[in-house]
Length: 458
Image (cartoon, rainbow, N blue to C red; front, side, top):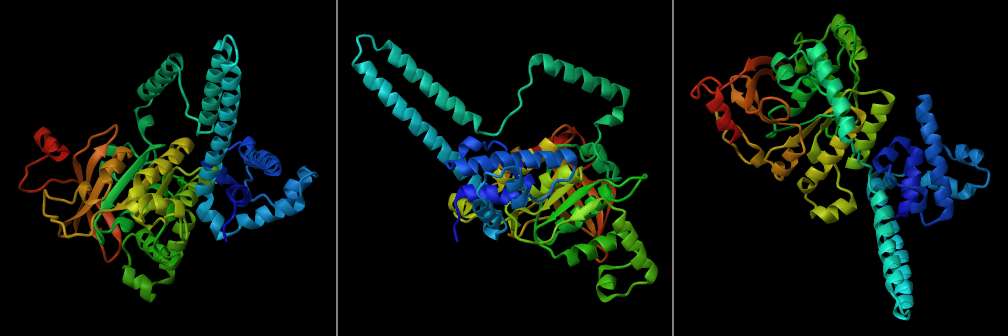
């Protein structure tokens, strides 16, 4: 069953109020129905009050009707029912876009009527200059109002930038480590990325079977697990595995190689190991989602929700190829998800920047056979649309197999740090454990130097 864009936007926001941060530019006047506009205004106020009180939660119909007795209870109940449907979750973002575009059309239609009336008046006047000025003013006003419906973009004056810059540089001089985000304990990774820095997006690609998911779970545990008397809040957005599969891998990681994945799967464990894995999992800051179907809208809503409720400082979306296309995206992309990758990365990055957490996004290199011999690792050109996606990432990396249990992460782009650098890891596949071994270079290529880095940049 298809619902109106108004009903989807209001209903899903009632069910998941943090989703409003994905469409924060929607205002009451954008709804064609006066009752819907009234509900939306009240809905935003209640959701903002909940956030301020630190108790964000679904907004049930009775909370709206109690706050405004003049609301139609039947309409509110119907909207709430729409919000609980899978259709609303999938179509939320597309519905918000349709709602805004329809409002723009109505606003331009209104402007056109005014312009035609002014033109008719001016054509019959001795001096049409006043009508011309009125038409220009109406065009300008319509453009201004429709542009205001787009997401806000902060503008900092030169004076503000000067103050911010001085404060930043003073902080760096007083505490050089202030440049760092959350550290993983992998020395080369942390030194090259300055830890997991707030607002930064890293994109990692690899061919199938290399171990992308295992690598990201190891990285997530390294950053978020209890260490130095604290745990770092994080979120692993799992788009392909069951929670059971994730738990098995995390248990192996947290038991630090004491048991293999096969041991865990077959129950070959001691009581102490079960207890140790449980305690380390409970003390970690890393939360994991289930493998439910996800669109980019639902992923961004999850990230915003956990940024507000748990103040996450690290997140991973694993991986882009598993996100479901909405019908609107199907139409735009011809059913090929990679054509949406740039748009998706931009949206994920915007949420990370807005709420100040680092985010990792996993992509898929081409499925064709690749030459992974030393110095000829897979490249971003093997991922469809990767060049454009890479433009919107702060760090771009290729994860590949270099032989003899050695895997290498090659940095192709690293904003604010060195690129064309390769870090070697030992991947103990039977245990799902990754261990950093330091910088790596092909044996026949010599040690890293300026020429080497220039070659890899090209």
